[in-house]
Length: 491
Image (spheres, rainbow, N blue to C red):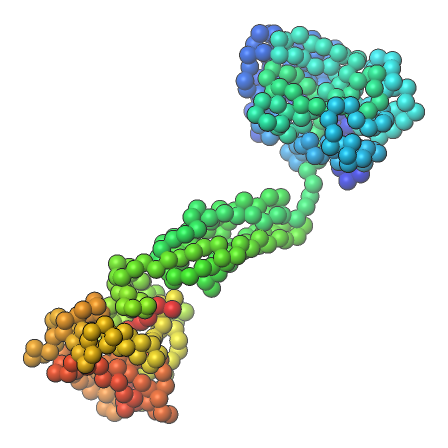
């Protein structure tokens, strides 16, 4: 056990460290031979003059830098102080910031305040100061061991490591000398030097949030891996990815499905408080380009997509049986029930999922569309205006009057009604289901797709393609209870 002393806001050991074991249970190598000490490049310790019995209890051990640099030298909850933490101690005892930042011998009598047990120090300026030993730190002249192996200056000086490197080959340290009342701040070689160690208690503080991302410029549908770099031991993590999605994992991965720029934030917390880091416009997601991407609905159905102008569409009809919030969509097969239904519902053409689902998708009433949760997250049922944007683009691209032919698949339509599928939209004649009696009509000849835009009270806008017609049919003459196909559009 070590005695300790509180000086200002810091709690220090009031004795030099004497452990022979790292705090993870690993033994520290004892090196006594002079040549071996100089050649050693791993953590090691020794006793002054290799005489544990005489010196260990009073002066502690001498450690090389490699032992300090493991981060495991001090007891759990304590650490070898940084250069800045040594400065904090010195300024608490009266040194100015300017003096603390200087190197060489600094201050007035802060060294005398830190020292203790005058009988062990050679007679000189240090112990003759009137405030000698007043801090309770009780620094002792434990000497040092140099690169070549000899031991020096027991009684004349004490030398203590900091945990802060200076450049590639040096480390900051603190020295007290019997003939000076100040404190020397200097840096010297890491190689083969043995100094004393004083440990400082870890500060219990709120965490400081920090993070990075494996990559910050991606294409739609790609995954970003985030790494927590927070300090001060957070216990909870709260991520906001900027696209409406969150996570409480420490190191999450997230898929960005939509083009755009996203601000990401991480809030970390422990028993002492919380802290948030926000990186504005941190993730840039670029469009995947024409086609070549996919989107997966909540049921696990995978859809190909196609870019037409500035819009990205599914090139297949929707077939989900579950809203994107996880709620099941009601399957209604009975004709009367279908006609009487006023809430979201779906069916398969002729109630034959096995024959029609994979090719034509499901038929949905407009009440299902109107939930806003029908398409996968990041996608939506297009409005009437967005359908018009599609038509106008195709018109301006050389298909005036033949927009429907350009959207139709090159197969599946009756009586030579196939299209040219110039944009990969692959529209198929999935038919419809009547609101009035639940009857199914028009598979192979007509296809109808809902918009998200309400018409008059009992109707909604839709688009239709007919096997003998080359343009696109726009109307709202069918009621909201009809069963039509759905195509989803990326947000």
